[in-house]
Amino acid sequence: MAAHRAGLGRPRGRADPPARCRRTLAGLTDGADHATPWFRDSWTFNGIIAGLADYRPPPAAYLAALEPVEAVQHWFYHGTRPELTEADEVAEGGVEIYHATPTFLLSAGGSFLNSGYGSDELTGYHQVAIAQSATLIPRRADPLFGGLVRFDPFPGDHDADSDEQLPRDAVTNGVHEGFACGANMAVPQAWVDRAGGWDGPWLVVDLDNQNAAPADRLGFHLAVYRTALTSNDSDRLKVNYNSVCETFGWLYAMDATALPFADFAQRIRERNTFPAQLEWDAKYTFVTPEDTPRRFAFWNRPGQFKRTPRIYAVDDVPLILSCGRTAADQGQSVLDAANELDYLGTAVLSPFSVELAADAEQAAVDVLRAHPPTDS
Image (cartoon, rainbow, N blue to C red; front, side, top):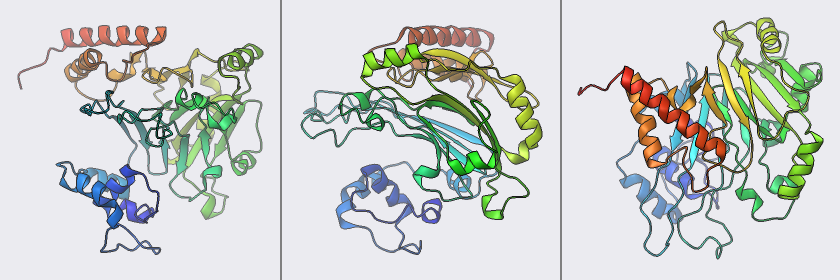
């Protein structure tokens, strides 16, 4: 299984509960990645929860993990779980976003979520969720964390600000179909060298170069746009957070088999014009390099408002509507989401969140009128 091949089944003393639940399904492996016939006694509680649940990953999920043959994106919303009587609070449902191709995985980093146990302040926030880095992970390599292209959370621990509140404001969910955006963008120097260095804010690199050593042929192309902050944004963030992120940026990755690198590099540069310094809280549009281009509208706001999608529209269609389902199902799903305040809803909405929710709901109504659901 994929967990065995990746070494994810090896026991670690402080593994988080979700990892223990997953290992109930995937099993454990030894140091040589061989399946073992035993399960750790201290994980029994998590194993019972996962083992007795009705859910099992579908066979298609295993097949996609083992031998990916096409690009696929998964959006998960955790929903609302029953409130614990003694907690006096509802556990927040998170959003997970993954885009996988045969050559790379692009993973969103999430946001702060309370535990729902009602004692986070007393337990030192050990059971809460905090945004991790959004990362681009090559499938044909096994790099350490420092060797990944990533967007580190801002505000938060990355900035050494020592303010316990700030990590709760970071949001690293700016991921959609090979595109990602955010703050504190890190790029491995080895990849910069392969591109021949930066061209101003641009870095376009062929990670499937025929002249590279086999171990260095990762099978995809990558475009990066990274800028420093404006002086106004630096001043604003100092006031808001008493710290300043290092950069703003975006990236776009594509399997090398989809387009020759020369066309990828030329189209990326010709179709996209961005300011010399990306601005905090600004909205931009990225145009993809495919033969039939798509337009990704994104919001450059890596902090707060965790229910607001950062890539919020594709070809002027609200992103929540562009999920590949039938028109009627798309419309109904948006109305359901709006009614339940799932992804776009939160206790504190930004003006842009309200605008997005209204646009999405109106688009859903229009779709349902044009394609009314059938009884079947």
